[in-house]
Length: 310
Image (cartoon, rainbow, N blue to C red; front, side, top):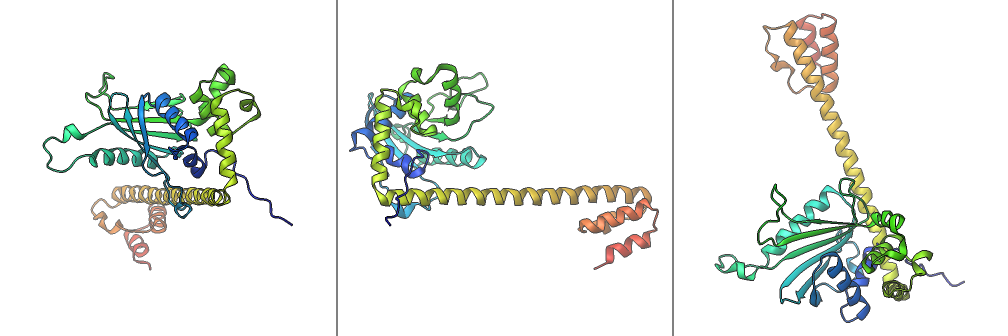
């Protein structure tokens, strides 16, 4: 019996996402990447180069699968762009600020007195399968501003967070038929090729359908995409485990500190002439036993006996 080949339908899969946008010799890929850059980051492109276009299945274990792009604008300006499909976390905010700084730093040589002439803008575009509840909008743009809201003079860093789930809010408000090309792309990235979106006579829908079919014809890519998804689940579970352990450790430390403070305060009130150094570096169990002893008016010898226990 012939084994049924798996089929990938999730455009948020890192490998599918990169397959859609990385091959600049493919007119469909070029069209989608140009659409994202021009409509989301408002950059008028003349040339687009993907610096890491290879789809290497051996890299599926990489924690980050980032698309590195360099754009030459209609004005001849160079812009470095990094794109990723991810979720919100403190780590992702920190990581991409580090990427932005690194991208700028790599443009200049140390000691170059004319380094300012060689610097050009860096942009990050993150497709987030999440919503920041403090910023309820589809595309949340960031750049350094002062307290009056003015953008820093000669600013070179811009970030765009595309909050994929927010497209459902726009769908409810305006309906799919009112979507722009970039909104259709965002909808498909989030929802996939639904029946409703397939009813639209639109170039973006056609391209996304074609690219997904082409992807699923490559058995190696399909298997790599499946493994990549498992890797992401593994990373997520590992992060959740570490977070729970950290919270548990933090809670235990908090309980210990509170027990210590309460015990020392009660000790000082009953034995004001004694040094409280004897209550340093004890276990939670001992602090609780000493506190109970103090409440029950036990003498100092009883307290010292508890402290000296193994």
